[in-house]
Length: 138
Length: 139
Image 1 (cartoon, rainbow over the protein chains, first blue to last red):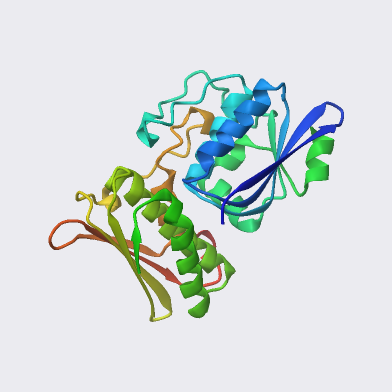
Image 2: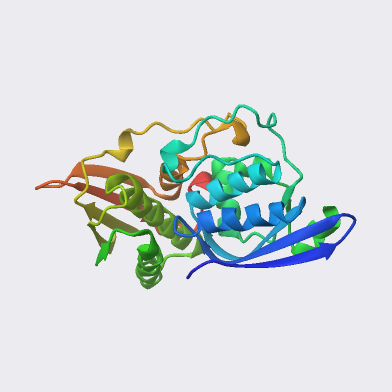
């Protein structure tokens, strides 16, 4: 199953851009997701909620996408993906650990949560049970 | 099953694994683990093994002694993934190289990963996962 993204802009305490992911996030789809979010950032989005409730599978390449999305939302250029995964380099200018607040996660299913926990990427994100609670916290 | 090594065929490979795992009585976490492990291994074959060039991936799956055994065979240059060291998860996520997590996920989602070179050139990776309903970390 391919990945479908649906974007919705919500006026909460601050403007929030909700990106709902439906399907499977794998090595064939992750670059599209990064491109989508880059476009949203260029259009002015500064707070993103990724609604993962419809995401049934996330590969390690999905983790690269999440990692890159955080960089995009920080106004940084993610590493060039064209050179393959070996193109990634140590990221010296990033924040010291802790959760960032530009990208929030909502509604992750147990399998996706397990992938985040197994790789430690859960340390980077505040996660909420559903879209509404993530928007309220944004 | 033989699948052309291409990123747009990964979904077919995952579908095959789901089918075999469900038929073999895999509980939900076991099913997720198998899908993850095989998807990551197949992705590595496509991206690193064949370097996005054409080539076959042969996949066999069987249930044996309360575990599901999946074998992936390719004709890519020899590479033993079991010799790749574990990533350092103590480094904060944003300072880490985000690649290299695939093998880490394979190790955590399987009970064994064994490698042997393939006669005539190529690689054989065998992944096993017990039918235990719990994730490996809780066993």
